[in-house]
Length: 418
Ligand SMILES: Cc1cc2nc3c(=O)[nH]c(=O)nc-3n(C[C@H](O)[C@H](O)[C@H](O)COP(=O)(O)OP(=O)(O)OC[C@H]3O[C@@H](n4cnc5c(N)ncnc54)[C@H](O)[C@@H]3O)c2cc1C
Image (cartoon, rainbow, N blue to C red; front, side):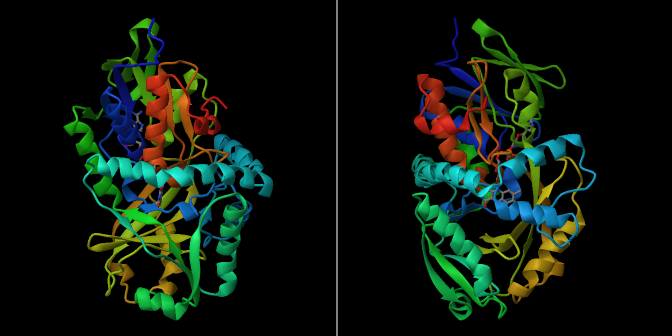
């Protein structure tokens, strides 16, 4: 009987960062892969995100501060967190579960798990780049945190103290506004305090994900665009069938469900109860008079920026909304209003590439990685704010568990059946 332990051929649903990493690491272990996507490579959140590989900031989303912002957003349209009043029953159920995880004690517990992830996440990137994925991963030495006051900086310092108290590492120095401006003249005189943070990296998300897809293909993998999987059929001894909306079928020994915010519909029949909710973020790009050379974060605005090729990408917002709702131009304006005072020499009217995408968020802030109730159906998703930095480590762990039948100790925190 096929137990699903040592599959020769795996079908991966979703050609985003997480699905492609799972495919690449399965190939490392000699498994043939077929990746299907309802649209195409990097069609989801893996396209327009900030591209930060920043362990210092890779922290669980449910925290007391975001709960306060979310509550304030019901009254304040300029809040970086948006919760629609008419959200529907499922959204409110998610938010209630999310709120239960926003206590200091639960945040510290989740932080301890993230500390474990953060120790390993960049090494997993090195495996990809050393293994031939051609797009650059750059060192942001230092990564800048830019604040309007030292009081605003205190919140970040408190987070870093909590990271260290939980056994995590973060290396930084305090900096004045003038010191930060000397590094990046795009910062305006409104930046009065901040941090230089070491050991962080960044990449160009569309470029990297396409290079990863190219590497999967070069190693004999197939990537099928336009395959919208609506169902997974467990055939037991014969493996699994992915069934597409038009009735086409793809047979494999096992399946990995890595379809981002839509993972729930496919995974639920296999015992996965955790709701994955869209925490939508927005981005656009501008052309500053003086192009920055490194990413930066504005904690007061909750906005992150990243130089991507010849453009500067600006990202922000956490909008708990339906995945397929149209882009809301008010959210772009909220980001601009928040970040404009902190930047100089930027013409926001000449912005391009306005984009909205869905972070796949879980109520406890932890991803879902591992086997479902079927040994042939696996999940890799729910990474929320951090699927880019955590994608390679996820792929490495999942491929190990699928090909050896042994679950790496770290994966115990991410059980999709929890
Ligand atoms: C504004 C913003 C900024 C962010 N910044 C960062 C950052 O700096 N660092 C970081 O680590 N993370 C960041 N993130 C989070 C990160 O983008 C996500 O966690 C990550 O991209 C999720 O990857 P994924 O592969 O799971 O999902 P996705 O990239 O969404 O990929 C899922 C894929 O599945 C496909 N699909 C869906 N349903 C089906 C189906 N039924 N059949 C077939 N295919 C299907 C979709 O077309 C899509 O291509 C950010 C997110 C946002 C929105």
